[in-house]
Length: 393
Image (cartoon, rainbow, N blue to C red):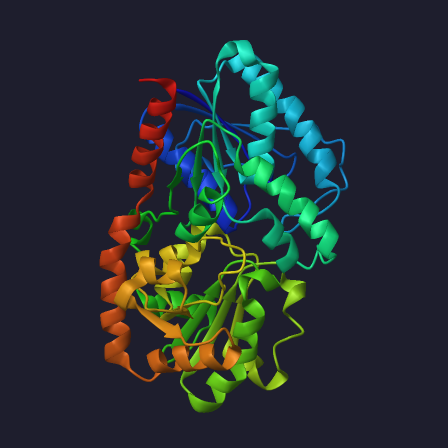
């Protein structure tokens, strides 16, 4: 099949949304399909080491000053998305795809618009929701007014009903969309992990030496965006409590943008913290290899899945997180769950793992075994079945 992917984002950047878009596309390419990705004018090009022939096509650089790579709303994205409609229309007209796969609510809307503009071609649209549009805007504090929130929720529900098939990245999000979608079922197309990324790595001690991380420490690691709706503020608040109780604890913060957190780390803790920013996705296996515990402080508000949890699992790490439905589905007995969505509860969940080496070992083993259930290959097989179904094959 020819698949045109709509990525209304500065692809590729080292964060979860982009990892999902990339890994889905790579898995479909491995299954023999031809993949084109339409995206913004900024973002990293795919490294040659991937050995991929995915065709990444970018909009014109009319907004040359726009360089925002981190997640979150921005009014200028309206202009970028209008340019992206033009690009997707051109690619759909010239490449004649069988499927347009629209990521996020913006990508779903763009895919639907182009489908209607080229209605005689019979192109099918799959919409891929990563979370709730309105709840994400609220969590970024971009949307506060109640009336305006209701307006965006109305728009979101209209988009939820677009596409010949809909998929969601989490069970919670799928349930929410299914409640308003009149056009059929919503498939859960989970994020995944590539276990091969975590094989053939150097010894833990050697990587720690490279990053000047103490060899004897119990290393607690957060990876991902340093923005509030990922829960990073709760982890930062928990760190002093953990450090006071567990002198062997050491922290790694790997992500961006750095300016959002560098002033939030107490002076007395800085000798026990390593910040890796930016944190390249393709360097992630080495970072997790030198770690002992993975932390995912995201709550359920945005209805997003959590790709970082799956990466921790693939690396065989125990995971401290909040007690949400998605986390329970992923981790089962491999999670150390905070009983409340507070920094104090998160500190206790992390502390349980720091203080018990056997628990860390057993939880990590469970997570590594469970990670095999959430591979990108299984994701691609399911997506392929959805494509074939709506194409009548």
